Amino acid sequence: MKDYIPDQPQNSFRIIVELNKRVSRMDTVLLNALKEQKENLDLRNISRAGLKELFLKGQIQIKGQRAKPSSALAAGTTYIDILGYTS
Image 1 (cartoon, helix red, strand yellow):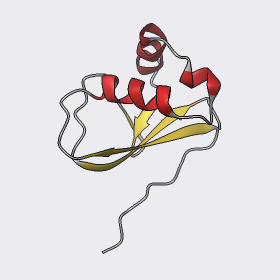
Image 2 (cartoon, one colour):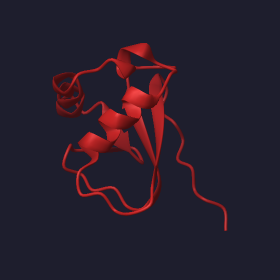
Image 3 (cartoon, rainbow, N blue to C red):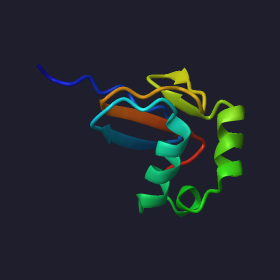
Image 4 (spheres, rainbow, N blue to C red):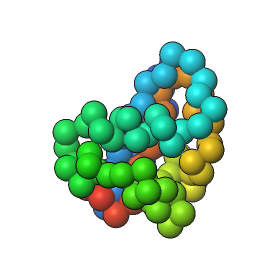
């Protein structure tokens, strides 16, 4: 069976997170993934407060839905889109 890959919104930066087990909060996982990527330096250098602001503005989405810092992430592959940024 082929994995479903959601369409990436225009003018957005996509982070793909691979997890072996469920995580109860996505904010820490996302911050670590942003620090490790090399495509967008603005997001690579983002602070915790800066990431929180993106959540508050609704710029972080999973499957086209607004994500919260406390959103859980299931094991497997998750596609997270950050609106207003590109690679």
